[in-house]
Amino acid sequence: MIMERSYVFSQIEDEMEQVEGTSFRALEECYKHDELLDELAREVIICARRYFQIVIKFDRLRDFERFHLEEAEYRFQMGELDLSRRLTHISLCDKLAILARTSLAQGIDNEWFEKIAGRNADREAIKKWALRSTFEEISGIGEKAYAE
Image (cartoon, rainbow, N blue to C red; front, side, top):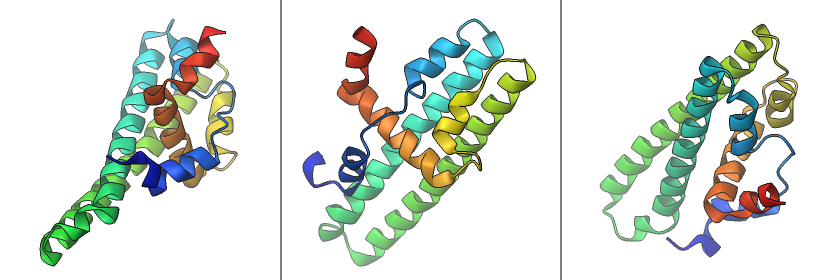
């Protein structure tokens, strides 16, 4: 995959600054002492990674594969990926909200949720967080901050 020409990667790079306390590792660290919250946090992270993968596939299909597929096949694949992308995004938003509510119900601070999604659980902000956090994880950018 050619990342330099990717629309998704150019969006991520434009907003590369990760808000402190919102990385995957920060979520894992926050909840590692509570079995239920740890499991919920892991589900959020897995869903964010899955969303990232689908968005990248969608981006690749839109930008590159359309030149190699028949029109009908291209439209079919775009429709399938678009549906998968939307459903995964909805699932991610729901999982984040469940984690935030459950941690609050157990008396654990969930200020990270507002840092990720804002006061109104902004779906666009959640999308950007998932893409940026996954990109940082796979590129190793986030790990440099943890090593310091």
